[in-house]
Image (cartoon, rainbow, N blue to C red):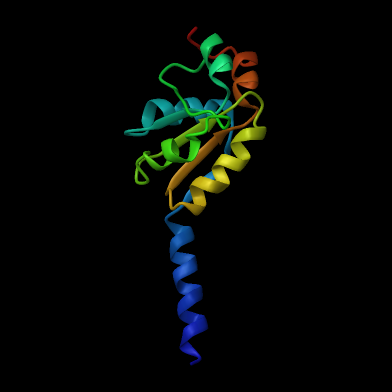
Length: 125
């Protein structure tokens, strides 16, 4: 009976050791886009916002989309997910959901695409 809590703690620590989740700077985000293999770049803004400008290679999965959850479930849990919105508010909720769903590597862009633009990084229209 004493082994159960210890075993549970070991499982939790091993899960955390293999999971990378967090908010990263614009430069680190850009680096992960170019270095990481099979990155899934997700823009969580509305389709109207996405249509104006976006980070090159991004896919739009808007929080306002009625099929949001369905689209997120289609992502590969074993490949890195990089997410952003306008300033970082929406991605906090998405990041939590992805972590709970078992995604191993999830990073959100600190300051969102707003900071990305202020740092002079490339966008596409």
